[in-house]
Image 1 (cartoon, rainbow, N blue to C red):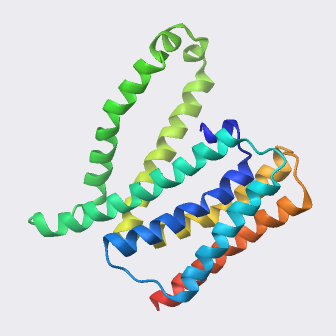
Image 2: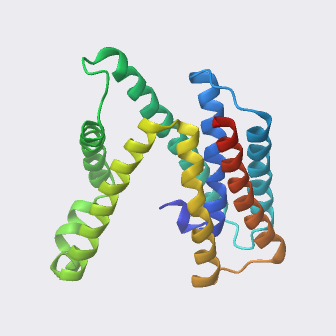
Length: 219
């Protein structure tokens, strides 16, 4: 959210490709997993795309880009940690498995203390008591839909990680950058140049190439 305050939607989408690079390197060092040359070539293309995208972005904002890079590290750490937890659960639990329901319950329960901490730090308690949003039915409808979608994302993420690895999870998720980048360009009318648009689509193609390389590696 903080990155989008100073970073366009399409630039943010392309920068998220850096998450794939961090995750792949993390899997190599933490789990001893090796990737073939096609995968590393695709990762290299993603890095080049992210750099050129920043250099040619007409709406470049250093703080927005910095927050997005932090987000990439946090996202990669999240998927790698979940994969480690699942592998550990196989060794120390009687069933040899920690199902999706347990993972989602633990994940969301652990987020409650952080949520309370942020409420206090940003003084949002007073804001919530005084805002008129709480009296709008549409607000409750939208926030409920958001919660249901978030729960669905949690379940599907846990199931996907159970079936695959952290890198595959990361790269398949990166495919949603194609419609997101298109939406950012056409819906929000963010100023862009031909060079910047080319770097964005180059990054999207690198993500697709990465997915194809991982599929071939798996087969």
